[in-house]
Amino acid sequence: MNREGGPTALAAALTGRIPAYGYHLDRNRFGDLKIIVQTELKGITDYATLGHFAGKTAQDRVPILTGVPPSVSQDELKYLSVAIACAGSVSHYHIVGITPEAPAEEAACGLNKIGPPDTFLFGPKELK
Image 1 (cartoon, helix red, strand yellow):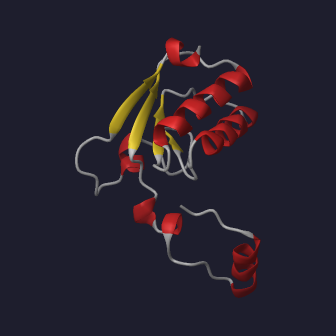
Image 2 (tube, rainbow, N blue to C red; image 1 turned 180 degrees about the horizontal axis):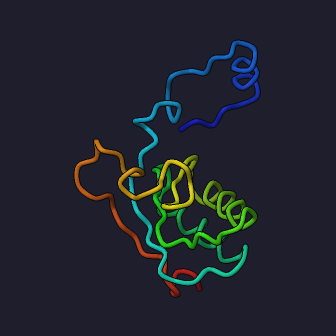
């Protein structure tokens, strides 16, 4: 939704303003689907695999990931982020308890959501 290029970033830096569209608006940052991690993730390869699954599943929606341990490293998050963007058109995602906008699942979904988001499972079979 917001794949900013160099000219847009330069204009924002010079003017101190950004366009009011896409993920710059709070209402567009809420999660559209949930992915429940039900397997232990060990290292960057497992996180990249989760990212690939999440990207293919979400496509251009905003996924909410639950079940990711708080011990996840910055490198593991980088590999997840690269894979999620490459496998789909995901530009924004939430990890409950990890990313700032998702201290709880309800915050990531937003108060204006009606009903639960679509839910997908990422278990040992999907990791393999």
